[in-house]
Image (cartoon, rainbow, N blue to C red; front, side, top):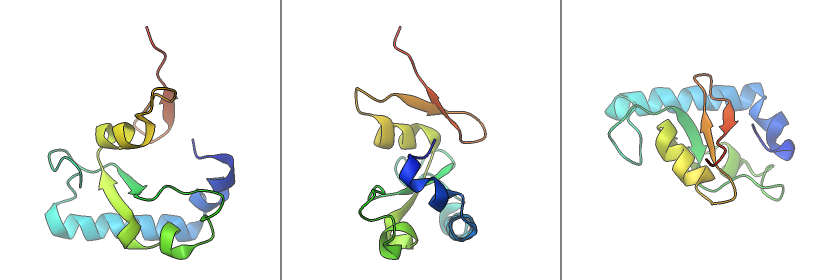
Length: 102
């Protein structure tokens, strides 16, 4: 789930449009492979520089292709949630699911 400060952004028609456009762009380059592992299909358009309350209104961060990467679920989870204190995976619809340690 998006952080509270970013929910409005991720729900916006502008984000949905640029996200769809970036996926189409990646499809023309390599069929939409993950930009990190280059092995699996991409699944999530990720911001290379994570969104923060300080940059959420900077369109060069939020809406520019140079800050995007199309990642498979595993690479996105490793990049974004790989910190020990936060462990998540995603369901088929892109919703985060907390992983509880055994």
